[in-house]
Image: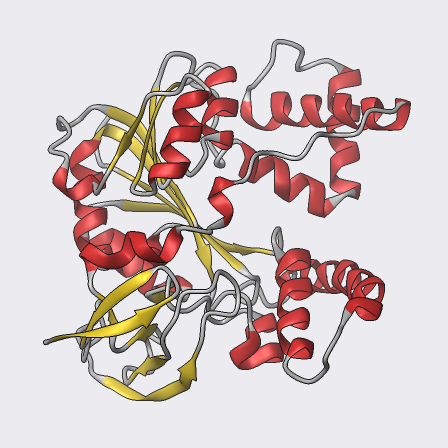
Length: 355
């Protein structure tokens, strides 16, 4: 049953979601009640419930927005923003060369690799774990495949898609946000607007399908993963990056954790249920791990959300939050060495069986 709910961008209808979309168990309890959108001004109050299956742990919205009304929640979303300019200096140029060497050695991007100098420059990135994690993400954890076809679902304004095109991939994108699609097309990218499940794209077309912070926004993650498997060529890979519901920062901030983001985040996964969904879709799991790549930004945003509810102004605390966020990210990288499941993001890479 659907009922209207007020939204800052129009009327959003909702529907009950009484069972877990991964294991089918009912919700055990309401984890967070009467949550509001404190980020992008969608209206309404939202409950996030927790799966009763202790081996699952998925959180989801119940009630949740109906699929047809989801675009109403994205009129002010961050995917409309362009990339900030990068500062240039001699030091930045030195690091840029080290970054290029790392991508060449680790993933095969670029022509200069295998030399002693390239290996030394690449090794420098291991002294900067946050930047190294950002570089891994920047290529979607994929080795170079010149001329191979890549589909990004939820491509936003197309910034990452364009970078992959510059690295030799034949790229396409999908997004249901018309403003983001317009920006991506303005970059000369081939991007479709709408729901991937309704596009009837040809089977066995792509060598890689990538989704960065998308699957938590999708009403039927199981159906989407099955469609991605159909779209992949044998041997092709799907890359999924999503918030980790078991992140240590979630434990720290609770209902103020940035990863919750009601009402756009319809469900949140831990590593095990996400792997299960991928396997149910016919994929072999190549990689499933957590990363602290986003820990700095998550900490800062979560701290601001928490403090904003207790103070009239947090402007004077912004420098303190910034320093705390940087230290937190270093701590999280350290924690991952002995508790690998506590990072802010899950990176799951599945492979379609075949040659």
